[in-house]
Length: 285
Ligand code: ATR
Image 1: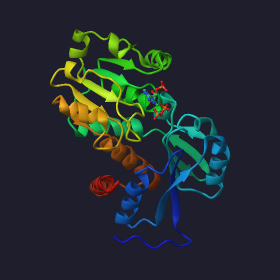
Image 2: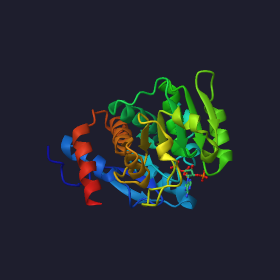
Image 3: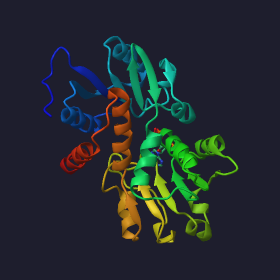
């Protein structure tokens, strides 16, 4: 269905972050609005950290339909909202906000987005032993999804070890063993036992090379998942070079976006349309 042209009745959705120009979310959501004939438009807005409070007040006052939140605002936005969901509380981070009659409600669709992306790729979380690189906001969503999915253990490696310790403590249960470690301290046996390696750091977002990881030391069935929505990150290239299965973050981006879309519109997200739009945009970038 053709999207109506922008008029005085057109509703606004957006993503806020800093930097924001690399965001693929406008592509994703405008394709879905267009396909379903929804009179709404989605834009990317740069809001600097110091301006977050006034930025949110502005979005509230203009009656925004909803918005996504990305780096570096996912945690700092929580106290500025009227309410947050259980997933947002568990992760301490919000990536989706819906405007309900002037009240801003925060959700975290990264958790379900990650779980759905892995499910779609037939990666089994139940009983899995995981190595997680990174301990920021994205890692917290991953930890929540791993715990919900029944993963057996996770070892968190982070540049700043203190953050990895805090994250491990927050999620550790009897069924879900969480520890932190330096990669260069892991034994060959420990590396061999890993089923899934996840890059949840921001390394690679701007095309940087990945830091040291002994890719050849992991068993052949070990899967490498990069949260970064680029087909050719250094992390994935190296995993492929050692003949491991390598999955990019497009699936997570798609599914977190689809879940956000459904929260805002109450309509089923057109997944195929959104996926095609994303793939096309990635090729053009
Ligand atoms: P996000 O919400 O996207 O997770 P974040 O909270 O800023 O963003 O976290 C970014 C993650 O990438 C952190 O784990 C960070 O490590 P630190 O906790 O030590 O900051 C990691 N990271 C960023 N740049 C990195 C680099 N050059 N080398 C290794 N890790 C890096």
